[in-house]
Image (cartoon, rainbow, N blue to C red; front, side, top):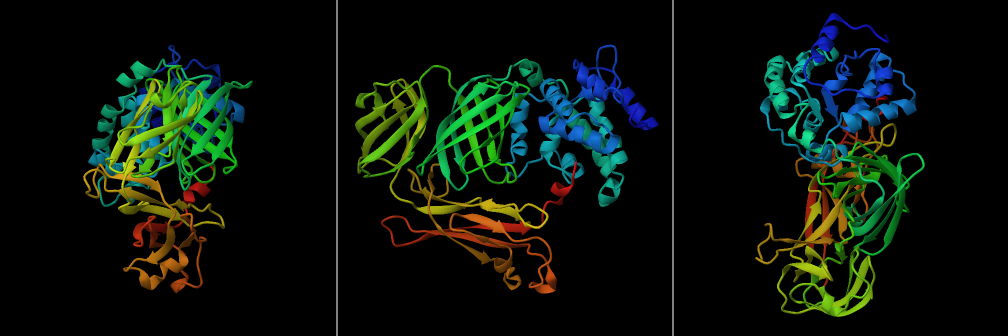
Length: 526
């Protein structure tokens, strides 16, 4: 035994051995984990057989076993254990979809549907961390004692409320919401991971714009999959990324790659329940706050359109070149095979291949503002194009965000801002659902103090923004130039100004930025 169990720990193990549970069929898991986790006659292991987690959840568990309990598997074996548990004791597509934002690093404001869970649990960690687990009822109810044993200061930290009482309300609710055996699990657990093949790609890279393209998966000698991705950007230019990765179970893709503008990037994608779509993000290894959101569509042999560039046209535009991307489009398409919607007239098809078609077109002066469907031969895509008359306003995105100081010990956390122009849409009224996002525009950027904090000169100290909209926070630690040598944290406005073509009146917008201290948890070695 690598460590001794207390009487309470033995009771927890004994309680976990009854009822439902998933058998552990891996000899490696039973060998490396069996010294502490008992195996019964049905190959169920205490604790392990009664919990399902995301790949990141299992990785965190393995790290905790090493940090606290002396678990010492070889790195290659630890990786195989994580792969086995992710595949056989993981979450299925419908379950992953609800918390994918927390795995791929999206910055979202969570909605916690239960007040007891909100006050007892999310004061320390995200709701997604809870919703990314499935447990038997006994395992959920055991969490209160486990957390009190591991973190005895919890009660003091929650001294203004009855934490134990809140747990007694929260844990039964969690047991009902997130059971080990769920309808989604029974329906989707036998699905197989995708193998070799080609998928169409659409996405948006922060600071660079929308893109379309494709990704090809090829088998590698070590059992992983090699990838090659081409991306065509709305602002012009193409990038190619070569990488490698694997499916942890049938639904969780974890990969890495290199491209011309990102030397080392990470990919986190999740497969849909029907196996036809992958959704996720890719980003620089050290900067998950940057990167791109992306959707991948399986190429199945039928004609498909992934997108068109540009996807927004102005009324009265002439000499427009549109590039339609997809798969199996046909190599002999003519003017009659292309439909761009009311008011957009096809003048010529100058190039037609299986994966892209190049069209010259113009837009009628009286064309109606709004979205258009697109057809190229037998392939079609709804709302693929939009027509507008003029840019009515701009927004700075994201409208609220947080950067983190760094550069000495911690890694800085940037914010990539974008200025997007909008049309009021068909109804001519700003700020409702039919407004048209015209995409990124080249704006002039600046930083301003909030009126409530102008005396602190935050705009001078918290960081700087370049003319591509990238906000770089300042260095962490005390600053002798500031009052009481405080650090460089603070709150500011980031402002963008843009003058549309043909206008002399600039449009402007601003976004709120909180510049905070480093996330010191990142500096703790697991």
